Image (tube, rainbow, N blue to C red; front, side):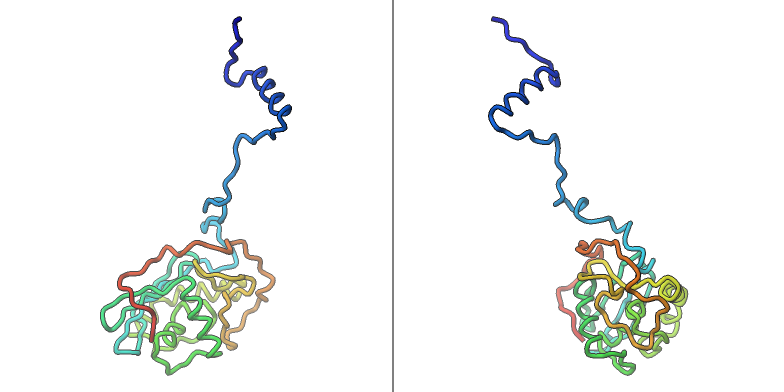
Length: 229
């Protein structure tokens, strides 16, 4: 007896298989399924990050001039939500403070210090006078004592003007890649200085960026030393 052979995709073969599956009580499997566990499916691209965060980030370099005392020695604009502090320790080690570690340090500092410490020379005292602190609304007038030279302080004037305009006219707020927690407050849980006024209430701006973003693209520049100062 000759048995009929059907081409792949033949409608009679497909009908036969469906009938057989139904008679056995088997469900029909979908042809394909999306895997939401993949990073590209679970997280939105940072190229489409929230429009209520600043259009630029900042990279601040700080140097420990003597044990426990720091200065801002370089600062440059960075891409949207790219925020990091490169720390050059007195013993030659270099660390990068970023993401959740940076967020936690800033949160702890602002809980203890509603306003920045003008005379402070510790790592976080100086960092909060940097462009990172400016993005978080910690100061409006630069503290020259936190910078290694007037040229370093003035070199980022154009960037600060952009941040000021976006904060006051567009209601944008501070946030960095790798930070965690709700974004409705606009400041990543970091308390802004009471002297920094905003024209727009932050609660009216909706965020669409990933809530569980991957780690920052910035990595440690060397050494395994923890953060201190």
